[in-house]
Image (cartoon, rainbow, N blue to C red; front, side, top):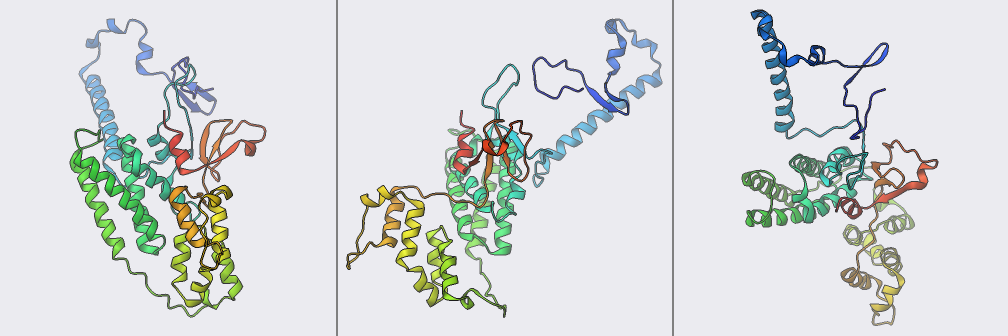
Length: 356
């Protein structure tokens, strides 16, 4: 049976799978015995020595081509067979090393996650938090992967015209961070040449310009639209929103939606979703008629307290195995009841897992 762990007690042999099972792979040097230093190379004729030299050169060239492929192909996604990662924070006798934020970002396949509407907002929020504080902590490969994922997000928004406001906020935070890093070059540690970072900043500014010039075409479909739905169904749709800006923007579409978006009960439910009741008492705002102005109260509470984050799907952390993974990909859990060990991971919690 092959030894697959990173244990310091590993026998160190290489194994190959054959029809008769796993067998230890013997290198050329192992057959020479302990007297390899006493071997007279003159016993090899010129043809054999030439063949050995050619094989060595071919092997080195093949390794170099593979290395150049992964280093230069900046558009490639770092693919791994497993879609989970073991979160290790310190070295032990059984496992050496620790897991970094960049390694987790490469392993968890965020390129595929942005194609899922349930995970899109989650990935965007995570990229925004990394842009604000953790960008320089990523390795060179992770930074390359970060900007590749970001490019795919921008292209997706430009194609389907969905969620441009979220991406504008992300690019604004990222451009601010890059401006500070480039201006303070020498005082901050940057992976790569300064010209690479200047080029990245120029690309981000170009994306911002494209998003600012984005024109969403008018829907010319003759089918049923949102305005054709009964009033109570339009109202129920508004009650599913968790973002105040989305409610306000939707209210600008038609006079009917404007009336529904100003409903006091709608804003009361939104306040109760994001904030605790004891926070209401500290910032109680009354209208001229003596009623609570829930809409104004929401934007007041927003200044003092963080809003509750809500995502369709998030990463999961198994407390039994210390493994981080997407729920549909699964992980090799050894617990009797794996579902009881799972904890949803918010974007901020994801970053906190790799703070040492």
